[in-house]
Length: 230
Image (cartoon, rainbow, N blue to C red; front, top):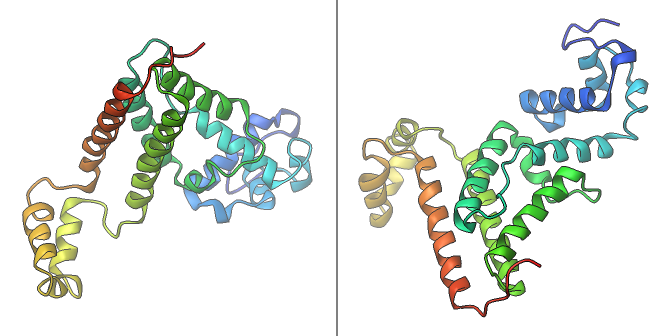
């Protein structure tokens, strides 16, 4: 059966990987709400029932999609300085989620994690253990880093502007601009930061990440050594 919306896949060549790739394509282009088993079948040029040979339903498909997203993230490497490993990993998380914005609310929601998901978390924990983080501080560090990275990505995705010029235009327009006059510190922030040449919100990501990693490293240095990973 041919599809006018996607690329038809011969039924005998339909694989779980092909289904996941097509599903991610739909979600990337049109958002997760546009993804149904029926719409995915149309995308692939097959009958909806054929998808159930590979996935029991949409939840199982979402598990596989999330696992694929985790598989795109660069992981900390064994023997790498933990700050550099987590810096590179955090930059990768942000890059991957900008490609797949639908995945952000799903990352920590799956009850059936796949191998890439587990490998991702295992590599992160291994990196922190090797750096000497004791258990409770390791948990704090992992939570704080992810809260910063995922929170920044969420804020980026929901801001009402995409660039510095767009932010400057918003400040100059009704109703935002006139409202600032009653709030001197916000007016200062707009004048000294947002309206300065070269401003973009995204430039704040790496300096903020460095602050988080440096603070955690200072706590790690003061903590009792644990001997690293066993």
